[in-house]
Amino acid sequence: MDHRRMLSILIFGGAVAVGAACTATSQGTGTGGTGGEGGDGAWGGTAGGGAGTGNAGGSGGEGGSLFPDGGLTGGGGSGPGDDCAEEAKLVYIIGQDNELYSFYPPTLEVKLVGVIKCGESVYTPFSMAVDRKGVAWILFNNGKIYHVSTKDASCVPTGYAVGQQNFQTFGMGFVSDTAGSSAETLYVADYVGKGLAKIDTTSLMLTTVGPWSGLSGAAELTGTGDARLFGFFNQSPIIIAEIDKATGKILSQAPQPTVNIGSGWAFAFWGGDFWLFTSPSGDSQIDRYSPAAGTTTTVKKGLGTNIVGAGVSTCAPVQPPK
Image 1 (cartoon, helix red, strand yellow):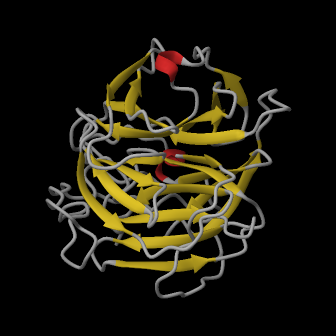
Image 2: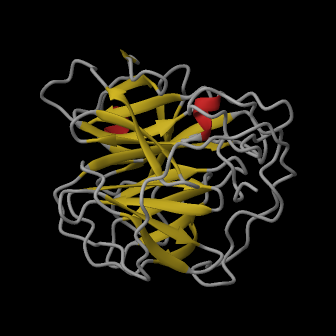
């Protein structure tokens, strides 16, 4: 869901509460309830329509080995039987120098997975999505897509044909086909504003969905296990919007308090909130947008790198873990 841009645009303001990195924490086994329906209409204020009531659907993952003291918080599953890999329940971010990190929102821990080596020495990562198996789909700025392991950062080419339907670079995000389903679709948003498309993960063929209706311009994407698609639109002010997956129509908008995003931007949905990565000074920070509270807060500064992409799978919780 994002990439490196040399654009002059926006830094997240709002109430600022800078958080420090915490010791690695993890999750135990847990069972989530059924995720509810999201609210309708504009949801930028306190009555906003984030993910619905209830815990994240399905069984939470068993204790895993991503962090020293266990697995991930229960409630990360998204359907009966929970087919999700443990590593698929975290947010992942990619730096301009090919560094792949995991990000655990409850503690704000950013942990280096490794440096990806995809053989693109001249080109840099542009955007990223993560599937339910914990595989990162990373787009480079030459239009090529690679599969990258979120366990060890190993990299293999996908064979995706560059430039299909004149989509060269784009934001990316996986979305469950229906709420709680293990079936998912990879959606992409063209960077020069042509609109929404999707990529078949078996044939690697891109088909267009439709032009934007209600907004325009570049967008990063993130999806949820309750089948909702959202875009981080590079506007002034920045807009976070819910998108109709079938048409590209904008369903709701939440303008953000912003000044300048700098040279890199990305975002992901996790636990009922949106986590935004911006680089106003070349050193990325993390902001948290809470639809329920209607607030955008800086929670971590000084990541020591320029984040150009973020990805989260449909296994991530749609409500805050208990």
